[in-house]
Length: 199
Image (cartoon, rainbow, N blue to C red; front, side, top):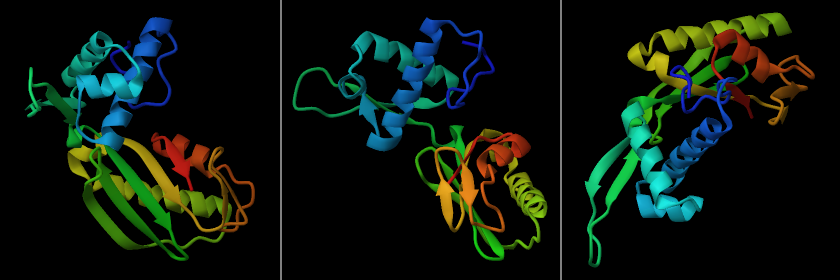
């Protein structure tokens, strides 16, 4: 796997082999499982993902070296050998949420363990045209990101909430904010460099 391919990026390196791509995707599934299920042992991950213990052990080791997962130590069991639990490293990545209201924006940043890091509300947001809408939105998002210090380089995704009808799969908004059929997710992703979803 390429060194610059983040485990949480949606687009993998085009030069990645099939085996490396499968490992990349399985590591993403491990992280998703840890995010949804909480701390897990190797046996838990193996059972949930239907993957062998040796494969899970190898990939969890890689995730630990990459700084996304940590060994939480041995846990108590009813008997036998005590297994180690593994969990996500909270500050190894963040997600940015942006809510567009009538004339304000709200920002929220959460870590990988769903802890709120910071919130900023009632950020003025006034626009007249689609172009001004996007320009102003990107400007406000980038201004908020600049306030985040070291966390700004670890933003893994941006979720944008708008009023009105949205095609979440394509990120297109309809009859919203003076826009109809506007590919907002793609435009914000391109302008900010952060993968964006719109809901």
